[in-house]
Image 1 (cartoon, each protein chain N blue to C red):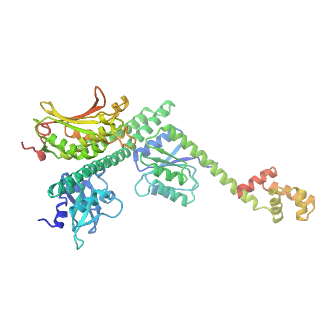
Image 2: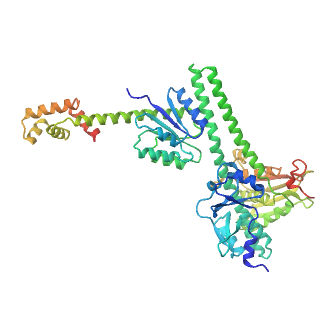
Amino acid sequence: MAESPTVFIVDDDAAVRDALALLMRSANLSAAVFAGAGEFLEQFSQDRPGCLVLDVRMPEIDGLELQRQLAARGSRLPIIMLTGHGDIPMAVQALRAGALDFIPKPFESKALLARVHEAIELDSRTRQQHVDRADIKARLATLTPRENEVLQYLTEGLSTKAIAAALGSRFNTVQNQRASVLKKMHAESTADLVRMVMIAR
Amino acid sequence: METRSAAVTAAVSSRVARVDARNCPSLAREQTNFGQVTHAVVFEAGTIRGVVRLDETVRTFPDRTFAEFLPAGPPIVIPSGLSLEELARRFAENNLDAAIVVDQQGEFVGVVTSQSLLAALIEQRNIQKSTQQDLLYRYLRLAHMGRINTMGEMASGLSHELNQPLTAIVAYVDACLELVETGRMTTAQLADVLRSVSSQAERAGQIIHRLRKMVKRNQPESSIRSMNEAVREVAELMESVMKQSDIAIELDLAEDLPEIPIDFLQVQQVILHLVDNGCDAMRETPLDKRRLVISTRRYSEFEIETAVCDQGSGLTDEAASRLFESFFSTKADGMGLGLSTSRTIIESHGGRIWITPNSTVGVTARFILPINHGKAAHGRESHRIHS
């Protein structure tokens, strides 16, 4: 079972950090707090699921810069940006750079928690897809060259008979190869197979 | 006969401090007589980096360094050979607040600020009267705009700072509610959080306290002047503008009024603003009824009243109750800072300002100023008033 999700809170204000962590705990979420972007980056690991609640205004490395650096490291951790009154342009920039949402301070706790739950769910979906993809690729690697060809034709929508004609093979041989592909790929049907190939791409 | 370069030198402000870029305003305040200084010229490794206006924004964040307050872009540099009129033109056209003056060798001479320039312009009697009025009018406008900008900056700076404790308080309280309601919090834990909430509320209070201190520090520089003179000057300045809008301006000034301690320019800004408002309100008024009356009178033994009465569209109840709020405006292009700024000015003089509907049509805006403000009650040594 994968690690349980963590709400990573990065804010230079100690009181805001502390209060947000307590708010997360009250919603049965585990939280980790960081006083600055540098501190967070030091401990950042791609493998830890959850979401990032980030203050857009921080000394040295601000929220937008941290967002950039995370993206450069290939992070898909969903980001909720906390902004002040006049920060709308920064918030828009954050959204363009892929932040899930921005929430102006001071906010309604319910609104923030709703977004956090959403972010965690999104993260878990993204991670699941990532796992699926890795699995499918591993399964694809077990196919023989001929099975690969059969798979190719199958995803193009050709029937077993048509594939046999195209490959110059006997119908029974192709039928066996098709069964083998389905088995190796853990696929239940040709449609399932097509879906997997799409994900792998 | 003064030479041209002497004219620019005359505009150099004596209220500018030299500071280091890495220094911060609070330190500089201890080292210099910061109260008299309006601008700081910022040096870094012997080179001029720019000029910082020591306004509310700087005073709100005394922990930052001067380098952080520097305006964007290269500093505005003026050669000392320029004429005062040319200097004024550059200031007005580029909306400058301050510029660095250098001599032909490129040596730093000083800093001209919009205030010191205005003072120099008024001093220079040989300017034709109309030009002088035109310039004065422009500068009253400029000073007004400058104030509005700093107010806006200040408001946004303060709201940012206030957001932090408020955010913490909201999150703390909501978390406690949830934890207490679901029986997951002991009273000892709750007490702990409540202490944090209390200290955050205190923090918010301190931000407000700082704002108040800052407003106090910004108290007007008073001189003993005549209100009637202030009104007459503004009326003269506005005459041509009002003629264009077909508005007749009438003065009804009581002649036996004592002179009172006021920041002349600031009070003129208030009158100018009220007159502006009155003119705006009369856009829909029939041409023959467009009349604006400015009057002064003895309001009480201790106070003088100045009133601006228009024949305009009047006020809705909502507008009447929110008039003095910052950022509230009935005008499409209004920032909603004029009246709140006016009130700040009048209150810093120990006066009051209010607006009432006329019995027939339009409204009257009036403010009263004390005759003896700052003498008995405050007794500030630096501003002793000589009578």
